[in-house]
Length: 254
Ligand code: PEP
Image 1 (tube, rainbow, N blue to C red):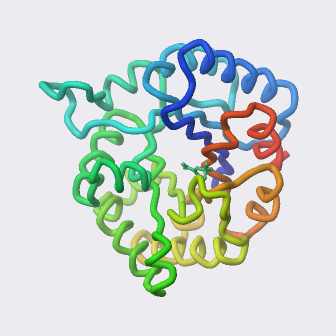
Image 2: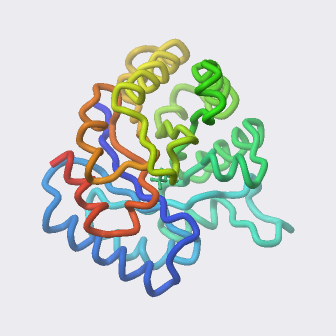
C-alpha cells in the first residue's frame, strides 16, 4: 500500500543553528509521539542538509530532502547544487517543480523533466509539485493544467522510475496565503491525478503512488484533508517551521 508522508518545506528560512535546533526538536518528538507508519521528511535549505541528515539517520521514518537541484552533475554553474552533491549529504528526497521555482526562477516542464532525471539517476526521490494558479482555477481549465504538468515533468519516466516519485498537489492560490482548498476540492484533484497516473502506468502503480496536498495546511485542517481517500499526507510550508504544529500534522496518521 502507498506510504503516508508529511513533508516540511522550510523554504529560505532559518539560519544554521536555528535549523538544527528545530530539526532536533522534531526528531525528539517523532521518537516519543509518533506511533504510526507515516514518513516524516524535512526539506531544508542546503546549508542544513548534512547536519540534519546525521540527526535523522538513527530514526526510522525521518528523512531529509533538498528544495532544488541543478540538472547537471557538476560543472561551471556558480551558486547551484547538484543531485550527487545533495545525495552525498545523506538526503534522500528533493522537491522539484515547486510553484515558487516555476514562478520566480522560470522553471519549465522541460527543465523539470531533466531535474527529475538527475534526481533519480543519483538516488534522490523527487517530490514533484503540480498545481494551478487562481486564474487557472477560476477559468475552469485546471485539470488540463495539471495533466500538462504531469505529462511534461514526470510521465516520460519508465514505470519503475515513476514508483520512486512522490506527487504533491499544491494549488498556487493556497500556498502561503492562508487560503486552503476545501477537502472536497483537494480530493477532486487528487482523484484526477491518480486516474491520470493509472491511465499512464496502470492501476497498481496509481494505487501505490503517494499524493500529498500542499497549501496552507495546518493542525486545524490537516485531519479533514488527510481523511480524503486520495490524499496521502501533506507538503507543509509555514506550519513546518513550528515543531509543535508540524508534529500535530504528522500525528494525524497516528
Ligand atoms: C509550500 O510552500 O509547499 C506550502 C505548502 O506552503 P504553505 O504551507 O505555507 O502554504
